[in-house]
Length: 211
Image (cartoon, rainbow, N blue to C red; front, side, top):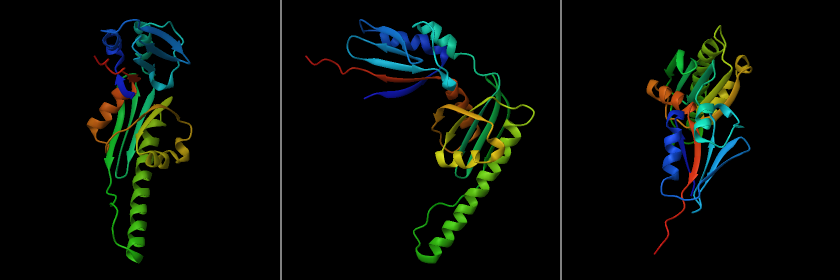
């Protein structure tokens, strides 16, 4: 079964060397903007550049890493889950401005009837207020004087969509990869920045031969 890994561009050549180690007949080719490697034992990988970039260069690990290395000159990260958000504006690999915030959103209840309905309305109101607060900070950080070109998102899909529904954020171009993150904290944001810049790899190793 294939697995998904994120590999920093600086470690890509070493990762490919590791894939090739102990395998024969490894061939690299470029296919639909993706670098693909296949081995004679049936093992394979597909590597995608960050920020939805297409790769049209030579089938070479070093050249592919070079294409992945420079982040956009102006880009952003938006992470949202119920009760928490993180937003950052970056110039290359450096964070220029950021905000991490938490807001309380009640969990689900086992109560029924009118009590459950009141609880659901209260919970929806809390979530809406949290998303409005996140959108306000995103507007300030991402669309002000230091406006970004592209935006990488992650967290909870519905929560991110609720924040991006703010019309002031409509001009932003959302690109991959989608970042599956826990409740946003500063450390989560910093890791998300690194993951957004990494090469996304789908890899499957052939099962060992039985004697």
